[in-house]
Image (spheres, rainbow, N blue to C red):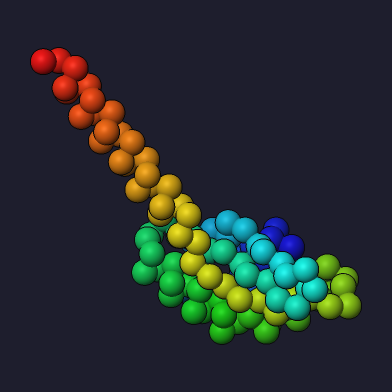
Length: 109
């Protein structure tokens, strides 16, 4: 489903706010009633939030196209959400690097 949504966003969504985004995951409810589609963007959080707004606006269109592409009777309602894990990972990585640098500088004394 993630691959098909990504293809549709890339080829069928012409809103410039959705350009250049990356879909990082899809979390489908056990009853298939809804799906959270996680979005990130190298341009930053604000751009990704704008992309989520654009994609949520196009969610019905995307869902109708998914029904045909996936040949399913039921496709979950789509909700696009900003994926904070990439940003959090970068913060953790920076903290680790800073801690290592401090440790290295204290070892020189």
